[in-house]
Length: 116
Image (cartoon, rainbow, N blue to C red):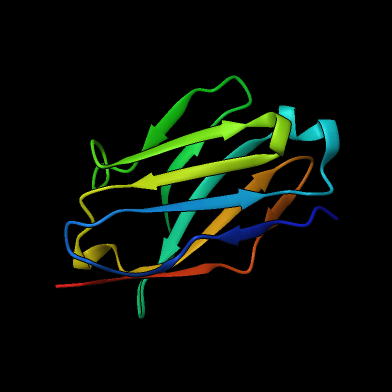
């Protein structure tokens, strides 16, 4: 079992920024080998992929966040970040981090609320 801990959510006005963190404190050196994704789920909606970063640093983004969100990783800290700029009310959701490492591991989620 791999523990996944998200943080950094909160309430922000439209146009503002937040940085989410996803840490896997127990993953050790395995973290270097995992693909990490940020997903989100708004009320009444399906969970959707927002951004993903591979072990080699390749990134992909949902069309709705391209140019506004940036995913990055710090393997020394076993942490992946999601920098979110130019936030919109439609970005409001619970954001979840997922690690793909001989299994799929999810965190508890962090709430992001963007007011208009």
